[in-house]
Image 1 (cartoon, rainbow, N blue to C red):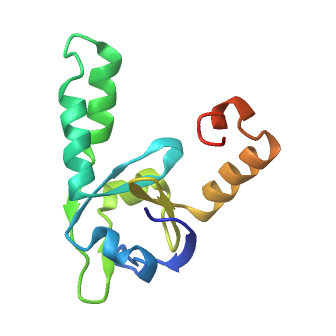
Image 2 (cartoon, one colour; image 1 turned 180 degrees about the horizontal axis):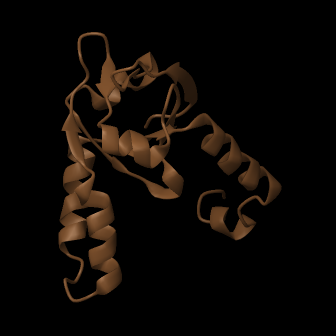
Length: 142
């Protein structure tokens, strides 16, 4: 699982270097798409396949399910790292995430997240101000 956070500059073509610690995680290819809270999610292909299987089970008759699938799928883009370990971020996704020149590349379970640094700092500040309830951790800590 990837963990940690790294600050990188994005070039004028919308490419950002994937940190060495995360390269093996996405070396076989990846899907980049819209994420929650205004970030982008980067999934390795095997994780994406499992997500697709779950999304296919959502009922077509349920409006919130349809909306989520549209949000998640319509921006999705298959990608590979180039020879310099850069990920090319499609323009619509850069706009969605507010990525201009700087990008925070953060690890998370089963994905990477790409953040506008201001949004990232705001999300971290909110968590520090109002941390998750201890009950959320009861299944993880003995």
